[in-house]
Length: 349
Image (cartoon, rainbow, N blue to C red; front, side):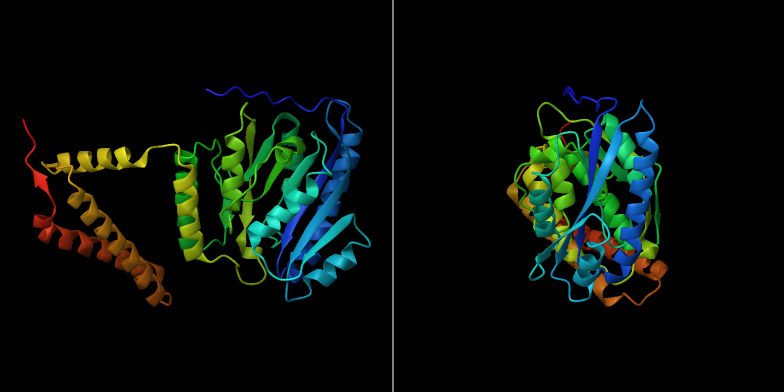
């Protein structure tokens, strides 16, 4: 078991808060978000400065990266930089979320002290600004605080497919990579400045960067202290289309899990296959043909799911779910008929 050496921020310490915003075509959302951030943090500064038993917030700064937006995002950020403590950084063309995160981390590292609080949040108005207060308060006794949908939180307006994919991705990251939080993919978080200063180079090229950051942090020795606060994700408030590409994101998460998995997957798959075959009254022969056929069958099933999904977007959800079940059942029947190509032998008794 790893020993956490997190030292709570000392009473009376004056701390800066940095709010990092990756922005791409967020003109309609930023006009709501920036004033809310200012209101929440100024209220926090006034309330905490009068309490000796708590950490004192002396000021804040917003760092926003415009990732080559084609709407008026850059213009509204430039306008707000004149009235709010906002630093604007612009990419000349769209580089993606991962590159925007790297720019934000590179910018904030030299600015934040080891006990300062650095908050990352989405700029699309799905992350409620008032959660910033919970993140700041929880940071007094933790190194990383995650706003979690799965720690007494709620998701509003999230499409069923994205909700299921998110839960599967979180389960895999948490269990395969030993990340000690329930919500590994939400980017709404607070980090102590020291954590970001020790963060290694990141390899992600897309939305999986949020999970990669937690994986990298969880590998730190001695261990950092994690904490989660409830998050109500307001996907229903989002203005504009989503920027996520589901298929690319699924592939990227697969590569991330394969690279950082703490479990030897091959023996694990074999144990699972043995238990299944044992329940069927057979034991599998450890022959490469078995695994080759299994991989082909699984690939066929996944490809069938994707093709079916792309062709049935206009169907009602219950009908689509029935279709998924039908495809899975049909695949099972085909494999059952062709099982003579699978190398089995009777289990020795």
